[in-house]
Image (cartoon, rainbow, N blue to C red; front, side):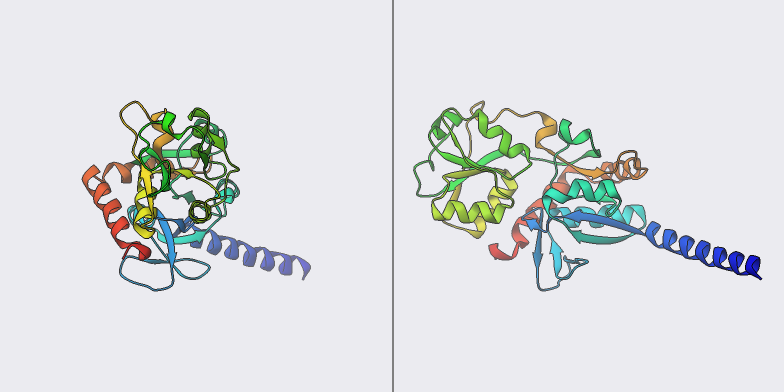
Length: 269
């Protein structure tokens, strides 16, 4: 009787495990901040572009539209998990999510702990400042000497601040909204951002502007530092499949997707 019971329980557990594994294989679970427009953001209303966030609300932005295309190419159902920036790497390492699609650059130090796909976007670094502030007309890093500058915690943005001569490097901040508030209040004079993020911030906050550096007068960065890729667990079998999907998305389509994201962010309308 005990043998029959043990066998029955083993069969039930096997079926449960198979069912759970099959369910997981049918989904593509993506982590992102949902707080970094125009790459990703959260909104309360649903429309034809948005996608439900697992914890509630709706996500939109460049990363969301890219995640949709990747999930479609994989033949899987997309699941978006809202995750703090500092927790994204651990989430993909632990298997909580399958991929990071969150405006993340494939920097060398990150490659030690996770793998990356080919880039799906490439940008440039700028500095967001007040439109009527003392650094609004800056055109070089030297013009920012004496400025109080910050960047997001655990990002390449924060490390490049050291390239500004005479800079007053402020404590890194967790989110871009927090940096915008700090800039508006005068706590800082500027923060480092990718160009799309700066366009988003200035569209939503007309009192802000951003420094567009003259040729060879801006930050020095490698191609990997300014590229954006999908982050994956070490050895993930999804990497090759995702690269094939990305290869089928033209540069023109990617640029149009970014323009659409900039135009559709809620605060810019």
